[in-house]
Length: 544
Image (tube, rainbow, N blue to C red):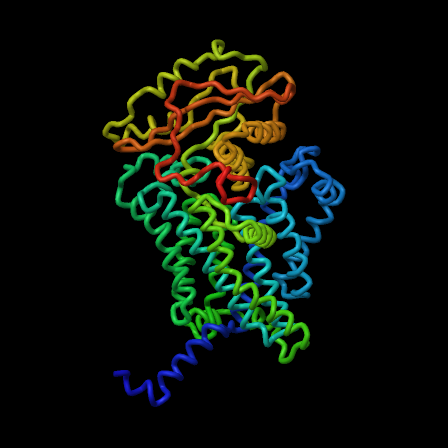
């Protein structure tokens, strides 16, 4: 029999309350203000972080940058237009922080973010600035939706907040699921990233930790499970706040370990969308937020009818299509096959236009290698390489032995090899050369070298990318550039750093050659799920 309260109306009332809480989440004005101000500050920091590198990151290859030299890209990413764009972008960030003209400022920022971080993903070496760019765009459009509905369509404000919450939950669910499939559930993931000098703050320390140490196993399991569990909780009204808090705390930890620029701060700010009016987090933020902040949050009492109707229609449609879009992407990814032609075309157009992706970040496929870059006299042949035999011998040495405290230097020596005298070091992770401590630089190099697997049957894609990148490095016409590919392997007591090969790039002649250094060629990372794709932005296997 059913419980008595199901007949006296209380059960129905509880269901109605839960349904209303799910469909109509509310943010206190103080929370909305904190989110906007936090994003404004982080956006300002991001743009200032980019400023010393603006020519390389934002201009086309014609002007020494990473962008493709096409008419569409050249129209914006040139030395005349770009400074105007960057100035307007920075002004929009400041206005969002100050709470002035927030709707036009948010709209302008969202437009710039979409162009650079979504539309340009396949028109540059850095893939739209990777995850930092993606989350800057996502947070930008979220702030715009909340600000716009608050000013002009307050009746649709709750729906905008719901769309933001659901979207973020699916992003985390996608990321956590991918990590579990790609190796995190089998201790393959964070252990490499935390020991990789291109990504980690503490590579020397983590390279000396036993690969199967309980700390690393826990870090890998938490890396995927927190995102999956947190995502599910964020979709349940009574658990939203706790799910958001789980993700927030996890990125506080990641921020202290991995060099990701402002990405972790932006994700933490995203989690504040779950500090709703009825949650402990909402009350806590309200208690500590200065009144001057709260006063910058404008929530109109009435709105424009047609804008309210349009906003509600667009947001409701997006919510309905959101799980379908993610399901379609995972179908492509897991089966490596396309959906029926018309559905697949619509899915690709929709997801690429809005930047809906499987968040394939920080798996072993991306963190298990790094590059050493040198300049040397042009025409140097393999047999003329002083010290080459020494490096090949070091690759063959067995480092699978008990690691004593005074042997930490041996791990560091295989991570940072002393080059021959005729070679000039370009990227030096030890002395913290600013360019190579920048997260976008690590993303760029990673994307270039993973293209060898994503486009395995088209080596010219990799070679062209490498030539374009090499042209941005400081070197003379009498020098060629050497990219040493170093991959990591697990030993019993530490990680081994094996220099697998060298890619020789002569920018003047436009040639790329490769030579082996005697180390065993790196096999795909255990549990690797990378395969050759049908094209840019596709999760369908070539020929699938």
